[in-house]
Amino acid sequence: MDHQPPSPTTKPHILIITFPAQGHLNPAINLAKRLLSSTNSDITFCTATTAHCRMFPSLPSPASPILHNGITYIPFSDGFSSLQNANDTDLRSLVSQVRELGSSHLTTILQDLASSGRPVTCLIYTIMVQWAGDVATELRIHSALYWIQAATILSIYHHFFNGYESFIVSHAKDPSFPISFPSLPTFQIRDLPNFLTITSPDDPFFDILNAFRKLFTDLSLRRQAGEKPRVLVNSFDELEMNALAPMEEHMELITVGPAVLNEAEGETEDMFEEDEEEYMEWLDSQEDKSVVYVAFGSVHKMSKEEIEEIGKGLKESQRPYLWVIGKDRRWHDMNIVGEVKQGMVLKWCKQGRVLRHKAVGCFVTHCGWNSTLEGLLYGVPAVAMPKWSDQATNAWLMERQWGMGLKAEVGEKGWVLSEELRRCLDIVMGEGERGVEMRMKAEMWKEKARKAISEGGSSEKNLMAFGCQRNKH
Image (cartoon, rainbow, N blue to C red; front, side):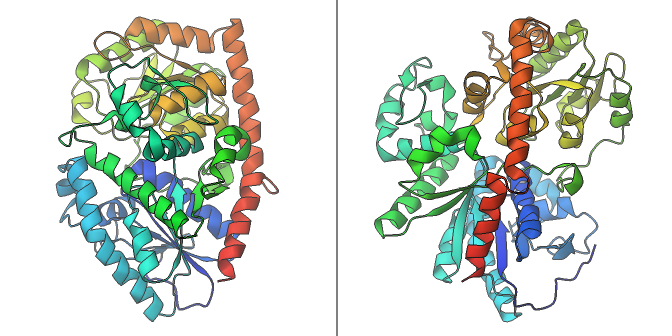
């Protein structure tokens, strides 16, 4: 690693800025790496200080820039004096603090880069940091939104904020109420992002809904001003053509996904250290397609009862399992970390390494979009257990539209019971007609996803064209 930023250059310069959460960092860093390899551009990556120093813990100070594998990483201030301060902050406060401090600090970063002979020629910003687009406009820098969720979700939010909000909110208490958006399949209220049914300012996620509202308001204002907003989408044409085509009237959509690194490109820098357990050696000892991989992302916190139900279901399935339980100390107090009998339980791992292992036969997932795309890219059928945000819609798509997953039904207490998890595993990994078909569909989507990001593929060509267009300015 080189702790010094690169010397002044006249090369086109793309800066990518993202919210400091693992689910935002992964697709943004993966896009940065693909832009570096596919375009003749200088790449700078920018996120909040707390995430920056988690990714690079050996830096002399949390705010130190670093050149790593050809990409310059420069943090913006989020106001936290330590990692512990950030960990103790609720999501609403984090969103507010990042917004308040990030805008002014990003302005300084962009001005400093210009003064040093490395002016940014294009700024790419993700959801939750839409204020970065305002900064780019003020400094007359070309910008593009990077939509890190499904194109279907983009379309749903667009329709929600352009005529459907009052109708959806009026039926928010009926989870089975059908909702039909133009050019999209019919969903039920329960299948939509849960932010859309928020009505109270006291709701902990109310600020997130407002962040989406501002984002789509800004996109509408740009269209009214005669500009067609440019949006990079972490999806690929064949996967979501029905959602993509109608939206082209409102914005220029550029599919660049799945933004998941393949075997040759290494791994994304995580904010969490993986376990020292030899989980890859354990996987090597298992039979092909026999292991259940269980992971629910880095945000959601489960109750002790839900954890116990999952553990019971896994053990009763009599299948080997690899279970990543995250950093929540409550999980560790149950004395299941490091268990190696029927299964192995870890705090964290490199998910891509696991999913592409020949021993893995099923992915029990929360259906975050990154995990959904990784499952697609590696051809692993899934048991879907969505929790919040866009996950219910992703689960619906995985089961109903792509045919490579099965959504587990939630019990009366609000979580999936052990017998339901066991039932789903029997279907997905069994030799019945439905399980066989799901595995065939998973292999089909694996080939289509790989083709999209390979040389000559739709997403790879889009990425190269985007780089060339930006290089002309």
